[in-house]
Image (cartoon, rainbow, N blue to C red; front, side, top):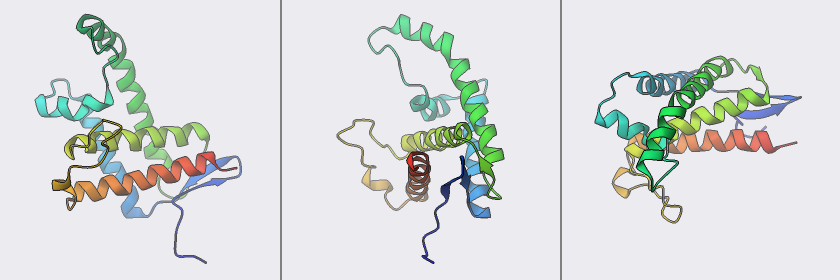
Length: 162
């Protein structure tokens, strides 16, 4: 038996997410923090900055169309993220068997957390310069970003396996 534990694996027609208790608690705590940002009725400038990557602009060159898009779609996008967070609360811990839709919700949730951490870490959204700002490389947030990236990769690998 190898020492590597796959945290996400295909099992029959579904998947199993097998996280340690402390990993489950961490993921739930992070989801709670992002959920609080999303449901804040009057977010301050810092909170709005943290959420910016969760709601990228659809119309970069047209402020009026962008405002209309955000007005029409923002609540739906927030509700989608909150629903995915609820699924994660049920799907992680205890090695529960989940279906593909639940796995996709887990992936969406992990990525949402990573996007918020990316703002904190000053990760560029320029595809040619995706590295983390070097001043953060020893920070807990950097290591958390790496852990979540690995967990997301495990989800993608499990999803794409036969």
